[in-house]
Image (cartoon, rainbow, N blue to C red; front, side, top):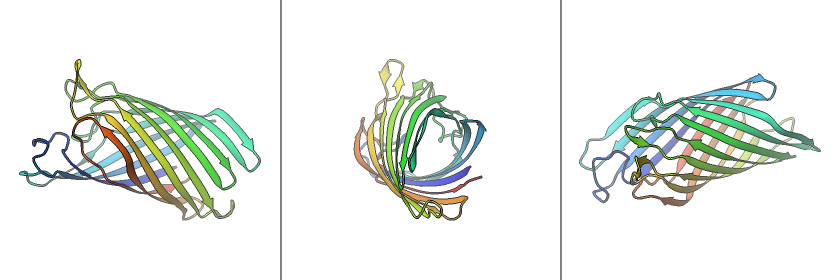
Length: 249
């Protein structure tokens, strides 16, 4: 399967690495992230995938000229085992999968985390007729950061519901609703915490997946923050837009 997605966010507030101080004026940033991913079955129950990320960042900081930067983000490698639990039901099925991720800190500045991140996720899915219910629990272990800074680990949980429109043989679209929760530890420098890093967020994502053909799927979604408890002064991201295309083979 090939998948490409384009995400757009506009943030407001103090930018990371800003030369200004909180309260000195308005700060804005527009970020475009274009992901290209390729997934392939490598053995019964096993799937391997890779993600290449292209990033464009436009910033507007008081007293500074507008800046635009483009570059390659950190690539992501994924290995998933789908055989933890498999059971078929009348008009549906249940699945439990285990996924491992490795984020390679080889992207260009300022689009790299400078951290060799190791991720592990437990993914569950329950399908019955037109209704799909699923979720995952994931943890990211950060092993580095820029300079003498150590990035904070990330704990996340996602719950989603999909409603299939159309018959099984001629399905046309899936309506998607999702809740995404994240807790990120603050970055550290030695035994001290780095200010303005880490915190908790919960977002509500709504979207649709439209079947253009048996092999091509168009997806679109919008994500809205419903809870934010961030440490210190951090950019406010009021909305995230996503469009994507998947090609099955």
